[in-house]
Image: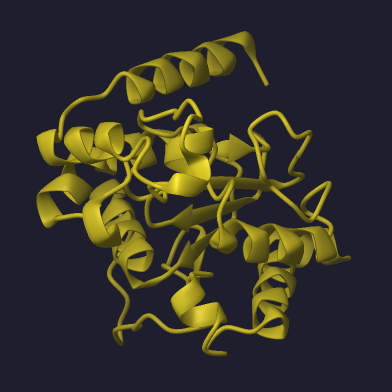
Length: 237
């Protein structure tokens, strides 16, 4: 990574973590601290949460938003909640994560060839950001996409992430799919031209994992497909 790119990352993260654009989200993230007995007394991050992972990754993973008592508490996406337990166990099985658990920002977890971000960076009430909040956060996702210029695959965890990536690519000039490609597990959209492939996955929320809508085997197939797409014909031999 060149010094110029490194400086852009530093400036991006500084601007993101200081953001107060959305009053409803600011209020919710700051008042979440101390409201759950299990974590009472812990110092919450309670700010917008930056992305994490390999800044030269070929796979960009886009989630929805920090959990109020997960990333909003720990300061790292998918860290300290059940969704992260499921996600990182699968990433470790695929060889993208150094360990299968993610409990704290300083627990030693590293990612290889994967960068994880989210459509919204503050914990929203009921995990439901408004269209205005999604729009306000969109420039942060767009800047990360520009910085991750080598990414060949965008993995979207859930329908809102899929829609956010679709808007991101449309704003960058990617052609609309024809016929329309709807979100679904392992749904794929490859815009014509030099654009990343968009790959859909059900979100690893408890609503999906506890009901069997998303199983470990299903999650593992996402990373197997993402790796195939990331390698591309030239890398495959």
